[in-house]
Length: 354
Image (cartoon, rainbow, N blue to C red; front, side, top):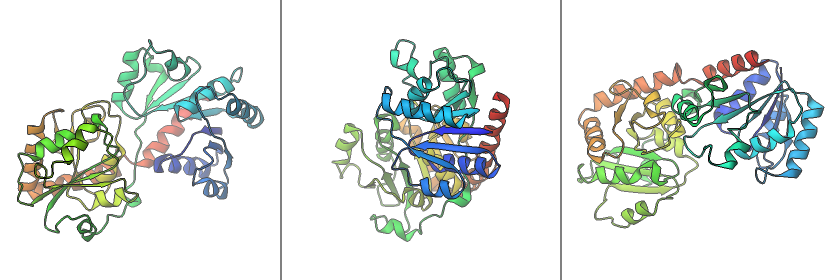
């Protein structure tokens, strides 16, 4: 098949998908941001690559360049991965018979009352929207998009992608070697529920046996205020944005995702599970799809600091149970949420459409 991918920067799963498609003999052309670090590797693997920046959803210059590329390359499948790329791709494909696929990884911000949504996911030119979880698929269906245009494909990972940092690495962040370490990673916006985790910490041991590690930029004023009260939260360590966040997650005992809304399929949870780190998550969005309560982790009610504290306390009190959950979490990445299954499902979708 001739496949044109229109993206900005890519994550590891997308990179693996593109390499696998090329290795299977498909003719792949990738249009990506000029700052994409993988361009040379893709070219070395036999893919055509065109750097192109989409400044906004109405970027006329980028749309014109893309329209020319589509005419020249004659793709059977065009896949646009971001909102800016999608809006420009829809206009660039006017009159073109290729099938158009896009991707949706989050819940929210699509509405029939919002004209901007018709430039992207509500546009009828789109043949399929790949949803990262059942929760995202159901959300888009509730907005009014027919199920026939929605396809759920999990963004899989692979345990061999990750090497956990040595436990001693946590000591450089001020964490004692014998502490039970709970990590929360991601851009710490209000919907991530980090404030709920800090509230839960108030009813957990303050003797140093528990430490909470926050990785990522703080984008929640309430959380910033709470962290300015070290006497209230003596066990919390905020390390900010870290390029080695995945490795640091692997050095921890449990990963908490206390989200209160709009979760699709958080990458940090999958990164932790791939390394055998026990996930403790809320019943929001796609989280209960990857974590089964008391099987490969724990699921608690959202906005319930008491329930979250109980789950963390249970893992602290029963290390054997915590390790067992972590082993099962890694196994679920090897099977249900494996990247090779992602590739297989994408290829099957392309074949159906063409």
